[in-house]
Image (cartoon, rainbow, N blue to C red):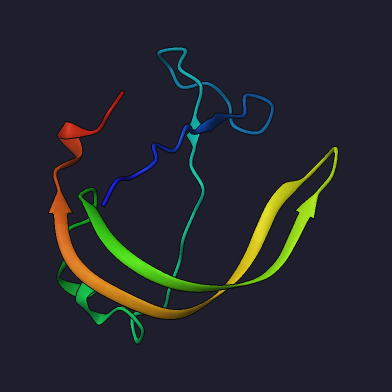
Length: 90
């Protein structure tokens, strides 16, 4: 499976710069209850994992101020494959 790289936003007006002058990188967030993904209890914080989601699109918003889509998660395949974050593309 090919993955599209997510380019984080930098929001200096919301998040102050760090001590080294770097802007805080803001990635899209995903949160799910452990009842739906119990495998995550054994995963390590800071490591990367690949899961597959089955989604049903429930909305879209395209405007001058907002461009996003909404989905219901209707299925999940927790492959549990780990990717060390040190191999992350910079």
